[in-house]
Amino acid sequence: MGIWGWPWGRRGLSGFGSASTAEDIAAGIDASHLTAIVTGATNGIGKETARVLALRGANVIIPARTLESGMKVKESLAEEVPSSKLHVMEMDLSSLDSVRSFAGSFNSSHKHLNVLINNAGIMACPFQLSKDGIELQFATNHLGMYCAVTFLYVINKSCTSSSLVSRPSW
Image (cartoon, rainbow, N blue to C red; front, side, top):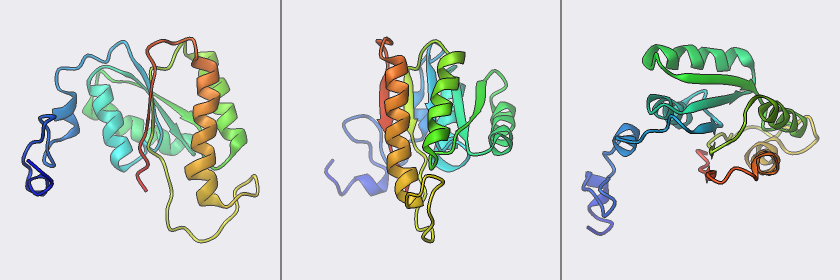
């Protein structure tokens, strides 16, 4: 196909093209045995990722800066996917204490983690410092993600069916 066919929706070697949806890609997959964390699931691509994982039966954890924003998303997704197994937990990626606390809470309430999708990120924000005194965008997009992966890996290194997808949306 080459790169010239991609913008016009032609399918590539994978069978998918630029017109393929998340539902197309996940069609036929039974994720009922999987536990997935999707950062950035309160809107955009992250929310769609969480929706399709829930549609396929996965136990989906939605980390949110505030429980209120996470609960709104959970309610919205539960309307679309009534059989969904959605859980909201508080985590602010710009705060290393918050990430550490999230990982500890996850460990105490879940046996394993199969999928971690790092989708959250911020971009083009005015200069600010995080609670830890680190530039906010760097703290959120890089350090927070790294710490989340590290803390969750340490907790879940015994799980043999884990995978990590780091897909920044910024």
